[in-house]
Length: 200
Image (tube, rainbow, N blue to C red; front, side):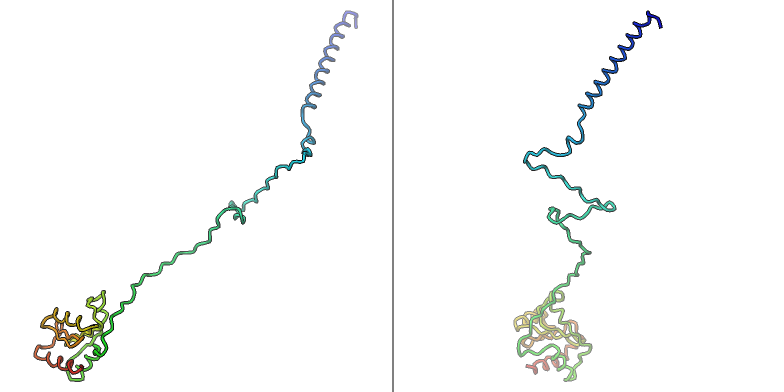
């Protein structure tokens, strides 16, 4: 090494030393600027209550949310089964009672038969007294091939119907004999009426 190269070597060493010194200062600054984990590990004892730590919600199972806990405010919906509808049935028709002492329709037909009069195919049609039938407001109806016997709850109602049917009927008290749909010859009708009169 010559004497002329010494200044150049010295200058090079000075540059390296300065560069190393600057780098060392930067590392020290970075170390002092980075907070350590221990500085945030414990809160300062200030005497104030710390904020509560929220608890983690329980994980859901198979994508289904867990049921609400009691007191959470979520309304509980009871399980509902299939709704069954009851069939609406109309109330039974209550017919008015025949007046005391008046013979029943069946009793009249029985008396006709006992007297030897034709009363074939007797049929109780009292349901026709109600609003779903003829709506006459009668108490009893028994129809035969010869004559139809109507019993009404009072004589006024029986009289009104007898007048409506004109000469095709006969009334005794609350009982009305109707010949409109009958096959009884007009000459035989007085025999039926006589038996009805005998019943009081």
